[in-house]
Length: 309
Image (tube, rainbow, N blue to C red; front, side):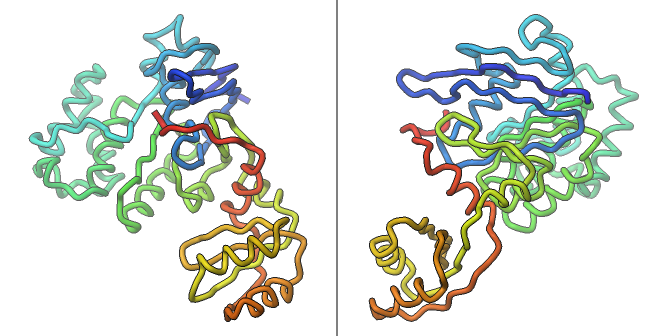
């Protein structure tokens, strides 16, 4: 097995806040790895440490066996990094942006022509090459950012919440594109969305600057051994309060208008508690979700204050 990424003992603090705390990570070549967790989990800081954008307090990083510190030139060409605020030039057209990023990556004119046509077709942006980047939709800007990140053909692609603020259709299209890269490019993608985590080969669940668990989505969900009860009610916040007081050993989590109740409980227990409080509800047992796995694994973790730097 060829390791695309090998990191040992990564640590970074900002004052009293430890954003990444003694993280070890191995990512095989061709894998799509998701870094999943809420704000302040450490996802952004970890990606910045892995790309060399941010200086480490401790630890080492190697890309395909090349030390990130000692071999800057080889590693710079191996990686592509698309940050949360990728720096497209909005007064330049789509094609001008692509050619600019190809030039600063020293892609030859011949290679650039071949790659830009392939990537434009790949992302379905061929019809928009003369449109200014500032006039593109959010989803199209993300696709253009991906093209600019891929134009020098990196072997490892780092994406920091690439679909944040993008509409659901564009999110799905973006992930379809990432799916086509699977096996050819190693991808590390940070996301707060659990449905996106399901599309990764493996998922690193993060909280408080640490990796709580790293495994395939199915294996992580299998860590939830207790029944999961989905509760639909007109007053979910009140229902969560009632159930939390009556069932202190259960995990009660709000998901929009729904509640998940996880614990060694029978369905009638949940229904009886709500009925006694004068609440009607529909209760059904469901398979554990990635959210349920995260809540279960994050219980012992103490999240540190502050935002993801």
